[in-house]
Amino acid sequence: MEIAEKKEVDEIKGLNSQSEAIFDSNEKYIEERDRHAHELKAGLHPLKNKFVLWYTRRTPGVRTQTSYEDNIKRIVEFSTVEGFWVCYCHLARPSSLPSPTDLHLFKEGIRPLWEDSANCNGGKWIIRFKKAVSGRFWEDLVLALVGDQLDYGENICGAVLSIRFNEDILSVWNRNASDHQAVMALRDAIKRQLKLPLGYVMEYKAHDASLRDNSSYRNTWLRG
Image (cartoon, helix red, strand yellow):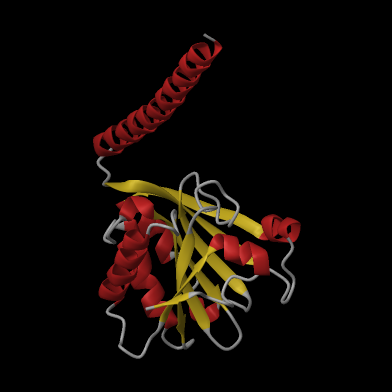
């Protein structure tokens, strides 16, 4: 009898959990639907996702969790084509930014941190560029992300441009590092959108590995 009761309780808990997930999903859908309707009524062109641009300027060689979070600054958010171009046209070009600096373009509600709930099970594709060409590739990547042009778009969290002393690094973050099909499809989509020359190597690193070795770009485990 006790076993049957326990099974019934577990089933109820499972149904409640599913109901909460469905409710959260519906709430987000309603919020996005209302946003699109409002922007269309205002004569604007809504994007599929709302984005936030963040900026980080930190001390070289220092990466503690507290100092990193303190240095991330939320600059601007946008949800329409018009809002994006107003923002983008006033941004400093990558070539003019000091080193080390990071620009983060992430979907609304996702912080550019490994530990964020949307990122913690994911990872990132990494591409290293000579400083003279990074600005063009960053612009192409931003347009693809904002325009929802990358395959498995729901699995994408955001993108980062890391300005460093001898090179610049682009990375695209995704939600699930264990979904090999989605990871590889994202790689192919990035290559296609950026028209990446054959000489460039893409590297992948899961965020839990970054947490273990406290490094964003060292010790990558997959190349393609």
